[in-house]
Length: 187
Length: 285
Image (cartoon, rainbow over all chains, first blue to last red; front, side, top):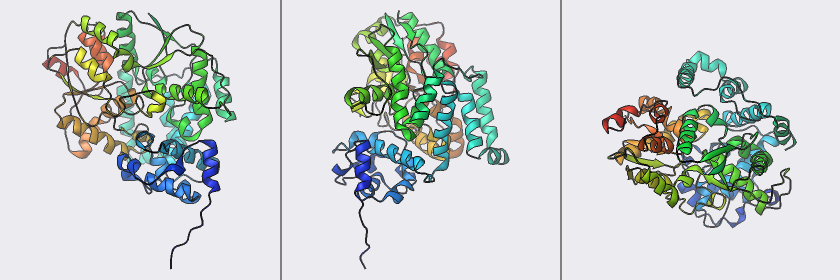
């Protein structure tokens, strides 16, 4: 029996309205995939994500590891002969998966982004010293880091940074933090 | 010469060494850095990954504030901040501006990636004529990473597959730039934190190639690349059983060293892989 698939073109139409990402221009040359430095950890290759997006396979795309593994290095978008903004489309899918409550296939990657923005919202700038501990807590890694001893590596690095005068110990709050908070809330 | 300056968050913390070297070098070349008043975080990878609107409005606020200073140039040392400021300017000027809070002032300063600013003909000439201790015999690969080049529609780079700014600077300082294929390969950026295993593989590949082409050190302009290649190098060596021993130095530190600025040895002493033995061997310190 032939496998069947019912395309849903509204998925891409909606994405293109938010973009445009020019995904429909893709002619599957795989230049994106061949140049991708992170493809070794992907479950779908970038060209497959584009193809599935064109066919409206929302679940497969949003539940993929690939959208979170993408490091946004922009090699694919730069080299695409048809001007498909592949890396930007990956970002669009990341945001969509968060907004529609799809649990990310790489939860630690997603929670690091969320922790980062929460950190910026508090003071207007990132306070590096607070970022990692907050993320360990948010992502539930603190316990396992302590049990596995992995925390020792982190502490060693932090201490070394501190000794070299490279670890800020207090956050810097800007005057416009409410403005920054409004940008992060309203969007 | 007065310029507007956007240091970005990490230059207040883990990249304090980079910040100090930039301030020292600019002072010695008569470049007065005026920080954007009350600047905020550009949103970084986090915003453009999961909050597109904020990824434009956060840097947009900085561009708006930059309009309060009357300078023609805006210098940005962090390539990701540079990229996000350029992306915001691009989106707000070329796009329909729909859905964003930011209203940009009509005249924006020219947004510079710091390495490109120092690689103009005029600046290279100044570097050459300020030389006190040429970096003779120092074999260096330039590692540019992603964000000062890509995507070229946003960054405006025309040599995005084979950038030259750092190579030109090394050459002007009397060093020996080595051509190599991984100039713009990705270091993994924040994946080094959230997927350390991936970060190790991506950085390991870059360090291995630098070694293979005979580099004694790596010159960088990105503090994210610097920390990924430097802070984790020893752990990657332990995990892979390969030895790299490659100091990862900012181009501004090398300018300071070659131009005999008093702060330079101190800036260079704040990395994880210590560059001092190599510089001693080459009689530069």
